[in-house]
Length: 187
Image (cartoon, rainbow, N blue to C red; front, side, top):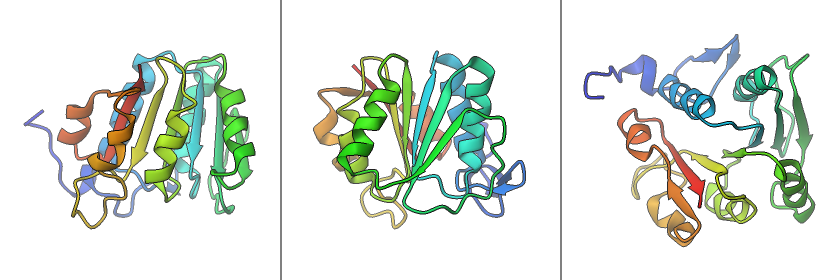
């Protein structure tokens, strides 16, 4: 891992796009997301915080390939990505509404699932949605970092309460590549 280049092109989001749509994840994060998806038989992906929809498209392409589906939520519609033909459902909803949480629970009920928290209140999203995961499911949160890092929206302290039900998944790799993502598996 020490030999991997983490300069502007891999560890920052400056002027990055995915198939022509601005994307808010780094290339190193995309590498790790793809690695996690490919090594797990994930059939359902829930995205909390759609943004412009580039990551949603990335998830949709993976789910199309294996016959799965994506469900993405945002508080407003800012989608620029083209999802035609992809197994993506999009809803403008508050992710903290009980009906939204229940809808996600139904969506992931009988399939190995990944929930990606990037809606702006990760400190609340991650523990709330971790509680509906099944054994083996994964949950991730973007903008993960140490206390005091200006950009960090979720820190190790924020996930302490989930340690009894979640364990880190490929944590050292995510850190080494400066992905700003925490990945946890339901135990």
